[in-house]
Length: 502
View 1: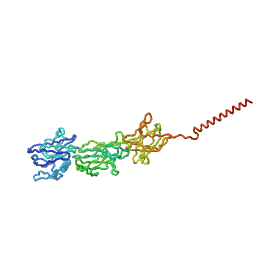
View 2: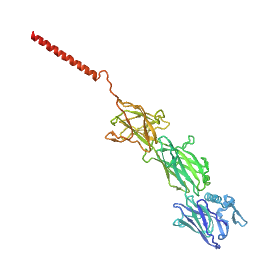
View 3: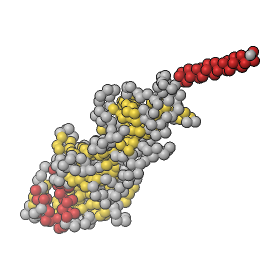
View 4: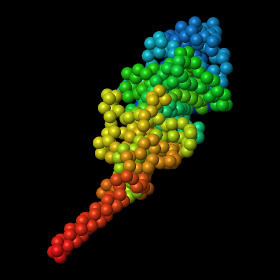
């Protein structure tokens, strides 16, 4: 072939242009620059080079192991044979055509059990110097080069030495989560317990796309459920080409989703892209995988948040670096005191999303994994959590002056007192509180509430009014008894004086 066959997927092949006469028994080499660590490189000999004038003319015949591929298989559409069985390339030499041919040749080799001529797995066959590796002592011919990274796949002629400059780019994955308050995508978001959180993994395609499998791992606070009827789980996957044209992929024909992760035990689900679809991918294409999960009752409250990790498997057991998002949720302490900030017991509350009317923000008791044992705070009091949409809310009862409620998104909320402690006046209006990327924790010093922490609700006692049998009446009775007693004493004294005078 007179023209250079190059630029297949992730590499650019460079051949020397000097003219060299063919010599019997001459051998060649293939050097690959920019090799990747932990990657296996292998070469297959498709054709024998019988003679050549370097950079001018080449005479090829098909390697016997590849006869069927070129005569009756996929390779017949790319070459012709003359009467002496010498090969001429007749297809286009553009990058897309050459890439398609090489991929078909690789598939043929793997399907028919054709072993590579040499492999970097075999000691001494691939000598590495710095970031380059070299196959030496090769019979002259036309070779197919492959790598387990799926990032190097190409054709080159050893006449006698060939060099492949690999761009050495591997696919990457970018994980994002949607903030429901703004609709924006990013690395973090906030959510309520019971809320469905939307995620997106973006696969950035590189040359040599092969065996793409997306692995996703969620923390215990996130529940994934792939259900095509309810629309939960993986909701949509799009292919976006380098021009920005979007195509929605079809589950079953373009990809499959599985929650069985035996091959990568830590994951919650895998998306496996079909081989025929992956072969159509071009460098700089993107795959957008949309899915969701529910923030559940086991969610971590603030602190490190609830992580969702994504990793792409590609080639032969190669994995990209993980990317992750974090979903945060928060808690509030409702503190009930008298006017001197002493804790009082017995109040009940509900939470709303508006100062008047609005919707109740339902809460339920926080239960342990057995669904019956209440989760207690540090003081031994029952805790509450945000309710799911399928749960009926209850009143929040304050024990020992404080109660903790977990699982709130950022936002403005309103606390309504539904029952005041005995002897105290009930609040006449809802009390506003705001969550902004932090828990509303309460602080106490020697049992006295510290101003500015938690959601503080103050109750005042009512005014004492006069009543029958009260202190005023008792005073009148006592005064009357005193008068009667004095009068009696005077009468007795007077009578005795009268008797003396007589």
